[in-house]
Image 1 (spheres, rainbow, N blue to C red):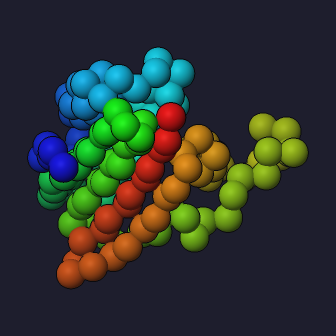
Image 2: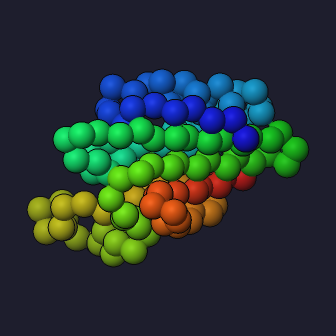
Amino acid sequence: MKSITVPAILDELTRVQEFIGGQLEEAGCPMKAQMQIQIAVEEIFVNIARYAYGPEGGQAIIRCEAASSPGQVCIEFEDGGRPFNPLEKEDADTTLSAEERKIGGLGILMVKRSMDQVAYAFERGRNRFTMKKNW
């Protein structure tokens, strides 16, 4: 599994997406799956950058393992910020209009629907969010 460690700030999103994109290209991931994966990567990384740490900031580690046979990617995000399991948050009610819907939850719902597996763990003071996609 290859990894990259970056400051958990929004300015690093492009670097994270380039890292993931390189792994997906190398594994021969189809463009449609790449787009779904990159949207999920953006959602998870942006949440870490915005909410994991206080003003002191911190680091995010992103690990990626992509294989062409079978076509699959496993991406893991790790941070030392506040414990937070986004999978426990109630899914956004997409039957409501935008005005009626509570703020938040739509991004993680998109991640859950576009990935084949998602998991969260808090171990040894670290958040670990894992997602897998088959193609």
